[in-house]
Amino acid sequence: MAKLLYTLALGLIGAVIVHLTILLLVLPYSSSLLWSRLIRETTPWHFVDLPAANPIRKTADPFFRLQLCRFNLEESPARLTAAGNVPFWSLSIYTQRGENIYSINSHTAPGGVLDMIAVSPLEMMDFKHNLPPAYAGSAVTALNDGNNFAVLRALLPSPDWQEQVAGFFASAKCRSAEY
Image 1 (cartoon, rainbow, N blue to C red):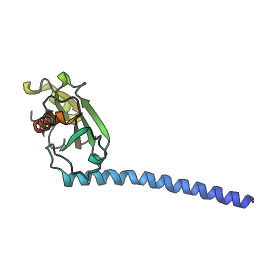
Image 2 (cartoon, rainbow, N blue to C red):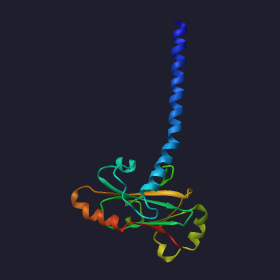
Image 3 (cartoon, one colour):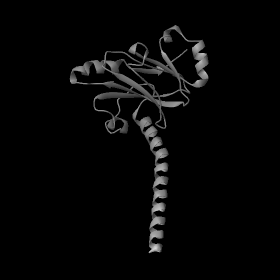
């Protein structure tokens, strides 16, 4: 009986170790697969709709419409803007590994308007000291990773808001911020 309990305990411990190892190995592969998929499905420096089969879109709240922009801070700082009257919007920036590193929304943005600039930490001081007047009202953030993507979401509480939400996304820009 003692041998049976010993064998069962050893088997259980082995199963736990195998399962934990598999879980830890899946995370790096899934994030690189997501980034590869985004490269295939999106154009850099433009907000675009995601295909219906994309996992980001599949897991999104059905009351929100979203668009995604992929950008590389090693090329240039990024300026993300949008205008329009929608009930609520949010913008989240992720690394290519899928880690959320920055968020802003209509309640936390200056004046409730989306106008933000993302720069690398090395460019932050130079950017702040040489800030063009056109960027004076922009929110500025430093991001450590070069390759990033931004997900812009807008609340669509009812079909009555469809035109305003469509106008908001039509105005959304993701472009290089020259200074």
